[in-house]
Amino acid sequence: MVMTRTALAFCLMCMVGSTTSVAAITTPDILKSSLCVDCIDYQVIGSCVWLTCTPAGCSTATSIKVKHRLPDLIAMSYPETGNGPWTEIAWMSPKNPFAKGGGNSHGRSPQLLDHASVSFQNVDMIGHPAEGSFFKLLSTFGYVLEGPSTPFMPYFLSSLDVLGWRFNVPDMFNSASWDPLTNKLGTFGSVYPRSGFSVQPHPYKSAALAAFKAAHITTRKAMSRVYQPLVAEPKPGYWPPAPVDVNNEDTAWQPLYPKTEMKAVVWPDIDDRTLLGDPYAQRISDNGQYVWGVWRTYRGCKRKGQTLIAHFGQ
Image 1 (cartoon, rainbow, N blue to C red):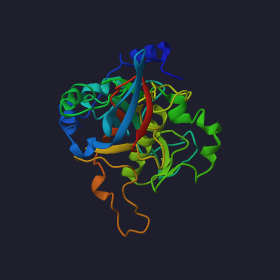
Image 2 (image 1 turned 60 degrees about the vertical axis):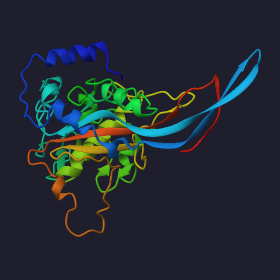
Image 3 (image 1 turned 180 degrees about the vertical axis):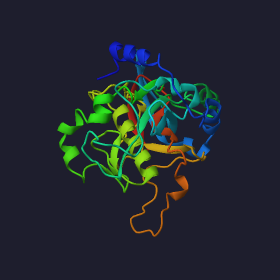
Image 4 (image 1 turned 135 degrees about the vertical axis):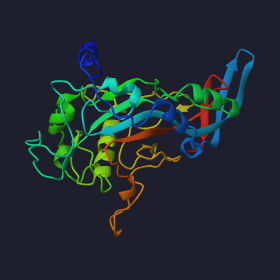
């Protein structure tokens, strides 16, 4: 379900407890990372044709069609509940009686997968703080599309989605959860069930898969989970990205922690099935915490008439 007043009240109740946060990344760090030309990937891809009719007759006008990414979300994947890596918003996900602990060692996990390769990650999906002011500045250089994200808005907090993130409800009733080949994200693992547990011994892949699962939920409506959907509605001259999914290239991930990179890639960006060694070794965090900027691709053109009659370019 969408985050209700009851859920918000529960969140406020949890905030009474204390939190311990490791200062992994700060808001100024994130804002600085958004000045990323590769991440924006601005392109003029075509044109739109608009029709306007008045009593005096009809006329047409054209406008350029562009596509570019927007930094919709900050995704945080971390093992210990209440110990989020983004300093200023760590208070949003404190420990509570229903969501304790984390990490890679679990006795009697909800899936009954008691094995050393089973890991658990908390995930928070927060509105990117750069959405808004930075892109208003960018718009002075050309036509720029707006996204639906609200800075600092908590779209998904796994500590509140206890039934879904820890006990696979309702995903355990989804046929995709029983087919290991369904929605498989490369060698990271299966997207379903969309919980914090995964049978993935590699720490980076486990954290990335958990973040992908949370984005998969957040970018859809009516998921019967405790979250706030981040969904933009299409309209004439405006084509927002499709929901996050396997083989969907509308979403790219910018590493912010443990190492900030000025590029964004679609996962999985490395095919390691036939490679010797571990190409992801340099991405492993010493403390198990990871942060990414989630950039999503929007397409559109400036409205120059009453009715959009044609558009060209993908």
